[in-house]
Image (cartoon, rainbow over all chains, first blue to last red):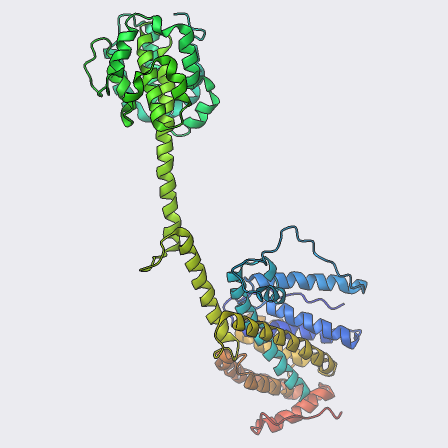
Length: 153
Length: 391
């Protein structure tokens, strides 16, 4: 089974995207090395998880709330895989979410659902996390595009 | 007088716990003590002096912090109890008490008055110098109960003074006065404490403002709430500007609501792109040798950390070299910041590529396809290489 073991970030001064690329490439290598070739959908899922994991492990975002929430979500996804039963577990939130603040615009709720870990944040921090998340997402997309181009040539 | 409670043991009961703060104010204690002892009445016995010393210490002790809690623990300190107590004792029956009471009622007692009847007159006003409420002293001691029920500072001080007055009358009998002193000092100290608390509260209100470092602009409200609101709004607008720079096409849009929509759309599109690209990679991936990926990873990592060279095997290939060239050449936006580093690494792996030539024969067909593409790539055509996997 393919597991994405995150590498320890030994060099904190490295550029963010190169760390991201490195993690992603290593994960891809692991996926490619997997002896039983899984189905296409399974590989898709694996690669997607690898992408998110490498995003979360980039040096810039390792301190962010969204990266931690993303990793948590990834672990949940990975645990669900072996059973092949996609049990949609509704997380029982004991604390009422701070989503109905009067100062926030109406669309803030959607943004909270998009950004990982956004439900527990205030609006101010949500915007900051969104900015960081967007940066990482963009880098990841570009990386994957580049790889795709390189591999398919 | 027969008091139901022995004053000394009464005091000792409570004083042991309160001795610590008293140590800090020994100087004042001594001054108090001198005042007390200098004007000792002839009735003053040794136990009385001791009680006085105790009470003087008590006064300082009462000024210590945390005394209020202690007072709550010892209900006997309450002046109300004392009033009942006084009544039981028969305060008014004491000789000279009335005269002293009248004396006390007449205006404020100066800190160093010349009281003929009792030298303790000076001591009366000393602790109560903080608040001047002697005007209320005219009511009889029995009225202390009423005044004690008042919550105002004046009421408290009045009762304390009256307690002192009666206490001094009792000094002749030397039993109840210590308690009164304690009672009055409790009241005073609670007043002082309340004042101190108010000051502390007002002071506490200031540090939060200093911490945020907000200066109210001209014509704007200086309320702490509005200040915080303004800070928050500024933070939000700052972050929105950041996002505006990140999200393409947001420069023309103005207004927070539309901006939010744009941001949400952009995030959704990015996530969809990740999904789509991962699907494509899953299609392409099995055909690509993971050794090439390893090399890529190694090269990327050599920028960051040369120590990791040993982690990945040196299975190089010209294809990998072309990979790197191509990938790092085209992904300007993603890795633009360290293009120079990539160039360095490109130079650095030239020797690696030479080694790869030895291993070219070991490479799989997919890699060889890339090798051929790399040759044309070396010709300088970076963009048009789309060699299909015919093999």
